[in-house]
Image 1 (cartoon, rainbow, N blue to C red):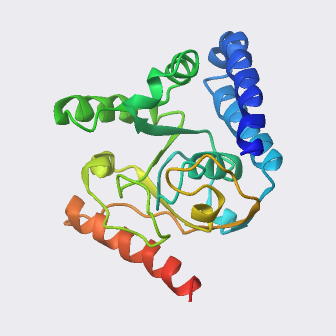
Image 2: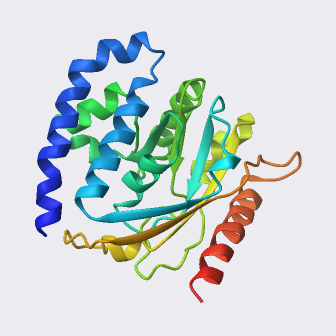
Image 3: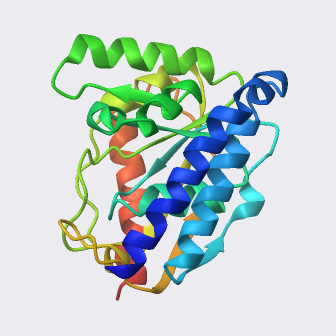
Length: 230
């Protein structure tokens, strides 16, 4: 629990820094936000004693933007991916996170997108905004919609994949071990190793539906996670 509370001043520092650096963020073509997010994530992981072993970084083209699709094991998934993917990345996150004072405003300024999961019309509108912003940044989504309680990969929903219909590139990512770092319903952060597998980019097929795409990505990511866990 000590590790969790020691990260709070670090997060507060980076939130304050983000407000101070916002004019520079705009002048750099909105790339500074990704650097701040990645640096903040890396520092918090180090404080918590979390080590990450990454495979497949060569599959990323730095000049491209992606819809990063990952399995969801814990709250720690966001800093784990943010720290280890060398791209200008943001998150499509549930709107409740944006209600935290200062943190929510900083996320909004830096192009994180709030998703109202209880209002489909608003959710679709948010995804349309994300589509426009993907000209300069990538977005992370968790198609399971909720965190796994046992490390296994749940069924992928197709809603967040609506962006793929515009032809954006998809970067599939598999996480193993994040559920042991920060368990669902707990704030006690455990040190340990998380494995990250980055697959080659893909796109929705010409005659492929979003549901079929969701199933294809589900098979790819869950197949890897299950095979590595045995």
